Figure 1: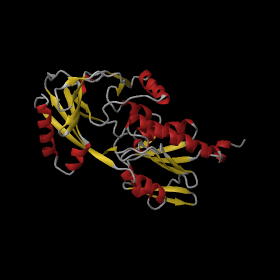
Figure 2: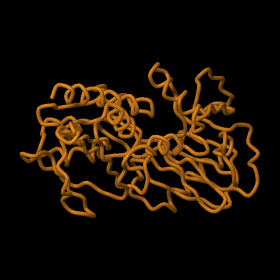
Figure 3: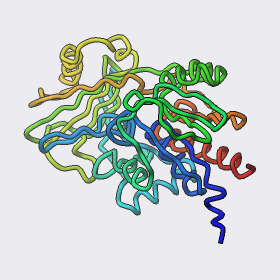
Figure 4: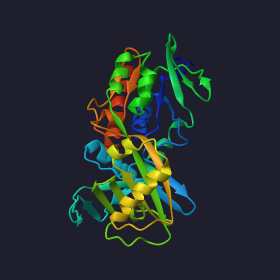
Length: 336
């Protein structure tokens, strides 16, 4: 008896970038019966859905929360909640805007991963083939398909039916320059900005009348009591995010001088000096303005792009961009 699966194996796709957009795209493609290999330069999946951990402390230092407005993403978040990897977060929210600080009522539903922001990404990655610590530096298209070159392993032997990029625009552009100049130009048109994050640790709960605050003065734009999020344990931790303009102006400064400036700004808002701190520089944190392409797919060569920078920014935009690309790719291979 002839095995039809052997005669017509599922197309094998390479997907570079295991953040939320890449994970969303890969999950949908795998559900459609396509084989997907994910590559990510980091040690684990999640991208900016990231959490730093230490001895008896943790702190989300990338995305702080996510909203769910589109019906498809609301359905996905409900699935995450059912799986125990996401929950609502209803912080006491303040606004510092140059005048007297005030509590800020909000009807926005804010969700977080539990027990850490990385949880939804780990949940999605658990059913996928993710090759971590693999930096893809070059693509080449041959008659048998695409090959990818990693800094760690050289040219991989596998030939892929398509390559999908789910990485920040400045990382996508050089990979695309030779095989798809028009996609490289699209990536080059996106202006991505950096963000300094400062994680603070305290031996005892901090006596401030809010759990999170938007800050429209000085170098800070967001502060949050990470310990107020559901499912958190360990020492009290707070997160400070600098604004994009300040971060860009100080992107190459050393972490000690950055921490001094952000701690001074936190002190002016009533925050005490921490027991210890850890700084992290996000070189590509957001896009201003984010593009509205949704995704990009070139079926004639088997090359695609997805990411929050293509779809309005934010976690929801990233997830939906990955899903949009997957649907287009799926339709292309269904016609093959």
